[in-house]
Length: 219
Image 1 (cartoon, helix red, strand yellow):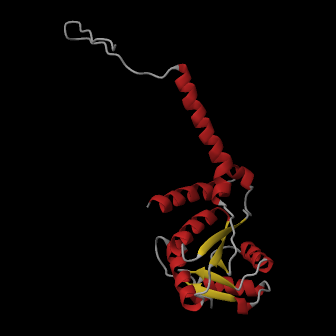
Image 2: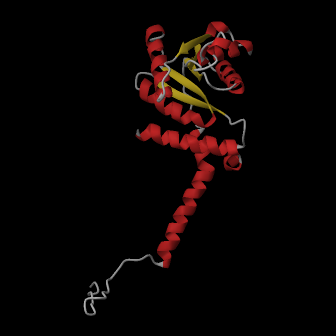
Image 3: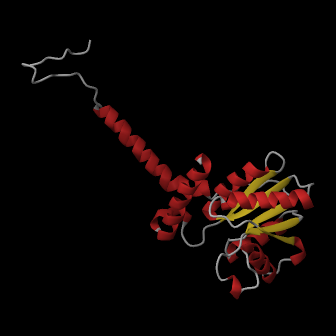
């Protein structure tokens, strides 16, 4: 039975209330500690996700760095791909200073400079947008494949580090169920993925990716 309210000349009242016990507070602290542990040790590998499938095409995100492009070459040569696609939008600045104009052509030129066969590369210029860039890139690549390689049943996305899972999520939304999508994350180069929080670059990349991933999933 709940306690009855008692009043003293209408000035004071006593009410029953719920409160946490010591066991309750310990449970909350344990939950906070568990979330903290998961954030430290599980966030980075969750985002830097690798799950390749049998695929005819390797899609390389054009903005990735040179070392990641070399990793894409190694991936291509280790499997039986038919084509490598570089996808990327215009630079947005400095285009008068270079012949390439967009990340797709820049990555193609870099791959060729690294010794990759230019006949096996297809650059695809993607729309310049302020938001949902990966979504628009996936749409442009799928449109090209439907017109030029309608027989394709699987693709793998080659991305850089923690951006991989978000790219995989977006490409799957656009491509599946018609075309299967796998993903390969190039390892982090500027920080230790086991201690990402100890590096300013690692901290910024992982936290920013966490926010961007939540935006992609819910908005």
